Image (cartoon, rainbow, N blue to C red):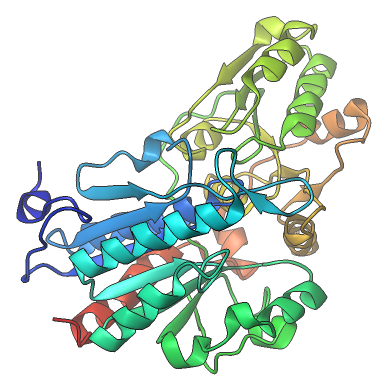
Length: 393
């Protein structure tokens, strides 16, 4: 148990220590794990810079990935609101209203007990159903600094403009002290593209784990689909590509929401079955990518930039509905010469030809294309400035 954890008890039932620097992160995680991943990476960087900080992650992820396990960080669950194929949020056990009410109660209890100096909310400023608003207003009045974190691309501009003009974004400039964009303005300018109702957002660069040093295995393919809940088509394509390249071996990074039975059946019936390993809960994709010759993946935020960090030119299979976020990101990266884009319905033989060339690319070339991958450091440094300046007790 670390010194930070010894100084504080459970954030809902215990008392907090007045001397600690306190941060609360909230991620709704409606389908994948991207929001939690970004928050966790920034939290780890805060602790690297300030080991005495107290960090709480509040999340709706129903199955916590292995990379969330850290004795220095307290993870507080709230009932999940999972986004269905139609884009509508729901919970398997409770009505939408009941789920929102429970989330509101837990979040308010955490803020009341912890009394954080800084609160970071990812993507939706007041939660999916407005469940964060009352507690955030109370924290703001106590002197806490409120920060909204947004990924590089949200959705197509017309859709996001309507959202940001709606009631879910009322009072953002008055209540939030800063908006951090985990990307770059020349990649996607949130004010120009979306009408972000905030004067000076801070663009931090991309929040991504540093790739470990690893021996790259020749003719090895990793297939990834984020949380995996809608990755069936990508996994099938990856298995078919491996069948078309007998000299290659593959790893399927299933993710916490993948359908394990369906995935096992796809692999078992493939001529490449003996050359494929299914990994149920990888500790992030970075170690897999660092040792791979190539990657086929969806175009979600985290795994895409983990591939770039690992020195690979990814083959992206973007989801294009109900959100166009992945398709837009994939096309922007392809336009900068950093990725290839294919579809789930493309012929495996055509996709397999992309493996015949060298899939490596240098980090220098990624930086020259305007992609800075040190966003976790930049965001953590910015949050520490806010923490020191916070008026919270």
